Length: 185
Image 1 (cartoon, rainbow, N blue to C red):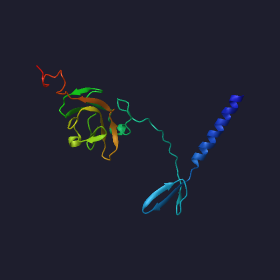
Image 2: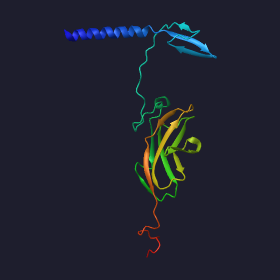
Image 3: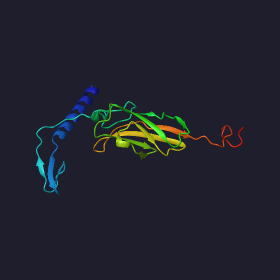
Image 4: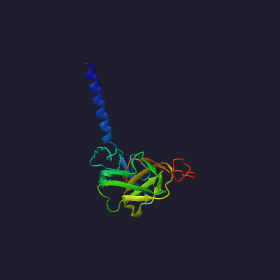
């Protein structure tokens, strides 16, 4: 019996809330040539009659293959964006300050969209905004983080890669194991 009483109370609450949601009033007014809508009456606002109540359901955001959310990836049709090289936690030796980056994008970049690359959260120029292979200058020893993303015409991020952490090492001439070190046989 007690369960039935709870169910009736829950059903009554749901009915009251849904009736209140359907009775929402909407007001419209124009200010400086801009049309505004609100559920609160404003000065010089007129009540708007809503004929049909539209119901929308939220769908989960599209995700890249790596699992990061890509808010508009479904709209653009992108399935994945991945940094192929350098590898995750890869140690690069003696690169002379020049880092070769290779990206993978599925499907191909669409007209009007551009690739953006970031090294340690600083933008890196991508020639033409459309190359999947880029050489980044001035990358010196240390640990770095690389990220890539596709941006639409309106500047909205369509998909982004997982961050890629890698390290650059430089052989020292002072290392005793270096055959070019001073005093080496």
